[in-house]
Length: 401
Image 1 (cartoon, helix red, strand yellow):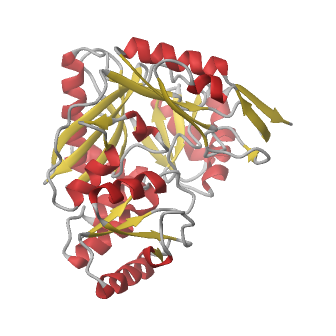
Image 2: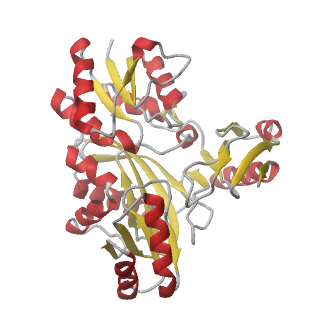
Image 3: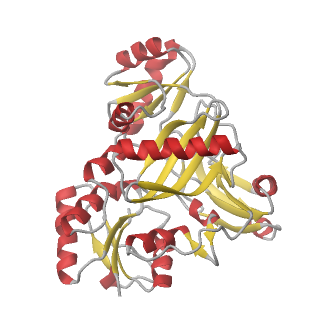
C-alpha cells in the first residue's frame, strides 16, 4: 500500500477532501500539521506534528516518519507547506519541485524576478521597502497601481490605489496586514480575470480546467467570489493563457504536481500573469471539478504523486462552478439563513458554511476567510452562473456589529 504524507496547515479547509481521496485510492495516508489534526476518519497513528514554519525541523520530522515506514509521496496541500514538501521529497528521492522554485511561489518579489528573466508577460512593478518608496514607485509606474504583500495569498492585503497621494497610507496599511515589508507596487492591469488549474509532468503543463471569474475585479479590494468553467473566452485567448502559464511555470522552475495560476486578459489573445502557486485551487473550490465517474481533483493529484495513471480527464458536467460567500462587514456572525432552500435549488450540488455562528468575522483585505461555498453544475457556463447568483440572493447573512 503506497504511503503518502499530506502537509496540511491546521487552519486549512481541505483536510477532509484530501483524506477522502486517499481513502478511495487505498493509500496509507499520514497527516502532517503544526498541531495534530482532529479528524474523525484519521487515527492518532496517522497524524504527525510537522513544524512547517521551520523547514529544517520539518524535514527532520519527515525523515523520522520515512524511517518508521517508507514514504512514497510528500505533498503540500496549501502554500504554507510547499517549501517543506519540496525539500523533504528531494532528500528522500521522491518526485518534487526544486525547493528554490517552491520558495519563489511564496515570495512574490522573487517570483516577479524569475518571470522577468523568462520574459513572461506580467504587470510592470517595483519592490518597495517603505511607504516613501511606494509613493515613488506609483509616480514612476503611473496610477492606478495595486499595492500587495509579497507573502500572502487569496487577495489578502491587495488594494488598488488611483491617487498617488493615497499610496503612502495604503502601503502602511498593507505592510501592517502582512506584518512588515517589503511590498509590491504593480501597474493595474484591466480586463477579465481567469484561473487555470493544471498538473505539471516533468515540466510540461497539462491543463485540467480554466475558470472564468464573471464578477468584475476592479478594486479597490479584490475579493474573489465566483469561478465558472469551462471558460467562455475565445479559443485563441485560451491557448495563450495556457502558453503563458507554461512559460511562467518554466521560468519559476516548477517541474511536477499541481499548479494554480491567476491571469488577466487585457485584450483578446493576450494574457498577463498575476500569480502562480505550486498547489491546487484554494478553499473548497476544487469541489466544482469532478472528472470521469466521480474523480476529484484531490484524487488526480494523489494519483500523479504516487505514480498512478490519471484516468479520464473528461469532466463529469458540461459546466460547473463555485461561489465563495464574502463577508460583507466586520462583526460577529449570528447566522446564515436560507441554506436549506439553496440546497434544494435545481443545479446546486452543495452548500458549505465554514464559519460557525458566534465567531468574529473580518472582510478582505484584512481578513483571510470566506463565509462558505456554494457549488453548482449545469448545461452551460451561463446556466451555472445564473444558478450561483440565485443562490447568493437567497442567502441572508446576519452579522452583529
